[in-house]
Image (cartoon, rainbow, N blue to C red):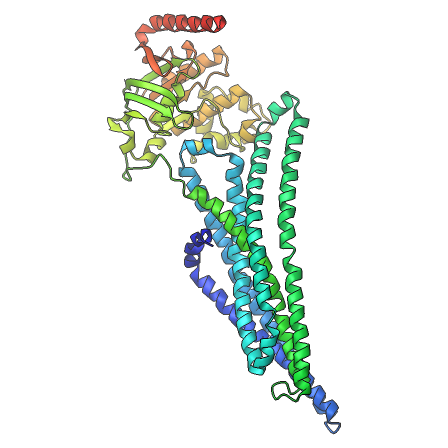
Length: 588
């Protein structure tokens, strides 16, 4: 139960609903206890009538009819309060589920980039859906039936004791066996539930990856192989689910058996006491009343098994949720105050190593860009170009040296203001499964249709969009699969332009377009970016020819740099470097 203590703050938050639910439960259970009393009295009246033939039958009928009417009234009232109990406590659990999902999602958003490299998407999704669902079952049904069981036990046993302490003692003798059985089975449920949830995460991750990469799977014609792999995972999941279900299935028969034993005890010892002329059990109505009280305990006792399994499953799920909630973001906002970003960027002897791979991506990098200037970064794949952009956006922090924005270290700049001041077009153009219009206005929710079309024209994608049947309202498939590679890149460029941020980072975002389209887009960007700080990352010299400054990276180091006026020299050096590396690969 240690892991579930995390949820106590939600019980405090919704304390009035929780306490009101408990009060209603108490009232409902007390009202229910009148039913056995009325039935017992009715049986006692019939017994008295049978033993005394002089009793008026009309009077007997009238008395029994009154008892019958009271039974109906009490049952309806008790049912109404039971309904209120469920509405109060179950609805509370839905509020907790809503809050917990939002808390997990909010925490996911502040976690650093490295966290998402270490964990699979399917596992993240499973924890915010399946695991939170299991926790809700604890907060709702498990807590509700636990309260109901405790209150029912206390009130029923008090009523039974008032009738006959001796018979109450006999009827409760099977309960220690019940407690021991619950303890043993609950331990096994906890173990198997954890294994099942872990396997479910693996299954979800595999399915998510296969659906995302379905084009690659079809291209390589390996559908049968992947189907076999998925089949193996589902068989393992089925076996773990059946293993858990087998343990859960032991609860019901065990509870009913022990309740049945209690009924036999009541009949046997109650009958003996009646025949012996006990003052406690002086009529058959008392035995019937006792039988009804015992049967009132049937569902609460039987539910103990189900509730116990819910608690064990919820504890296993909450442990998995807590595991991620305890992860602290490596990149933290160290300045809560507002920071105004103008656009000057400076790298001072920056080195950076990826912790997960231990690859040193940058080595003593130094350069500066003033506001309104454009920097072109050239280099082969793996030279560290994208790492520079990641450090500017502070997706990572430097290993050595520092990155300055307007002469202030990025670590001292308000993180939200920093990222809000940057528009990024990533190397891998990611689009959401939404309309083209909403994908473009992602960076500016209040953007008008005119603004959307204007940036689409600058990115040279407007003419492609209007050719679609639904134009800008065209819904894209997952990750923008509806569009070609070049179209996705140009929509991503439009999305970055509409934000109108003072810093624009273009990470090799023209690799999928032809040279003519590239030239037109760069011409449009030249006008758009005249007052913005722009960094263009590319492996093609044509993409950075209009840049004010150009640097060439190789193996994480700056091996050549110059200005726009030195473009010819830089181009010659870059081409020579490229040919040299190409010949070295051929020799290898």
